Length: 287
Image (cartoon, rainbow, N blue to C red; front, top):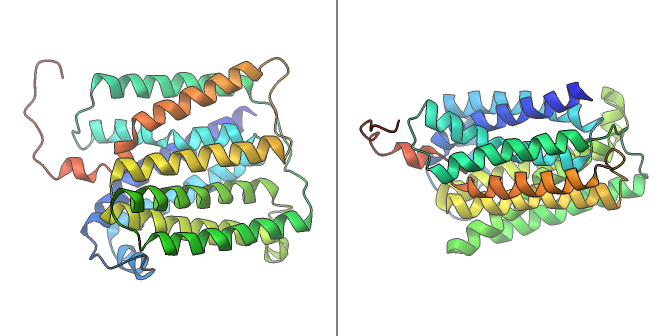
């Protein structure tokens, strides 16, 4: 179980670092109208985006390993905490200034994750019916349609809805990984959960990139964090039987709430490139 927790943390580090690189690429790509799948084609030609995508792949492998033996609510809270990683990377490498409140949020994320780690029990891959997997795939199709429709909205509403839909997509990826029967290539070809992971991840990636390119970073990221943590956590507890170590439910609830709330306080780091567009401030005595 310790290795699974370390895998989830490694995934958060990969995702948090990747977001810095992908954001730089997304802000320089030509914009279109609505949700344009060609955006991913334009982004893939940029080296920072390619490196970030490579880190995302490594992160997903680590996340998948963690989901094979940890509850969804633990893994998703750890993954969402990648914003704390992004904030620290931005402060260290890109010289983005963090406020006292944001440093406190980073520390609170760490406390929340420690409490979650304390409460986490070992879980086996969830055993669900083929009907459940097909229903999950149907939900991804509906989510994709909702995201395309959201691309026609305007202003903060567009950012919030696209961010929420992207978060649902990333949540479906986690749920799909949790219910995979086998990682054998032949089994993956016939398991609807594998298609949930592929379709959910790709569409969520597109919706999130679209929202970041022309919308509010904070609004988009906050909506995404809520969707990708709360929805899979509820599905895991209610439908998949996820639980905690005996007597540690309080630690799980408190840790989850602390980690998610503190992550939301760091929502502006969903896309730190906006901070680097201006010259770095002159050093001051408190740095």
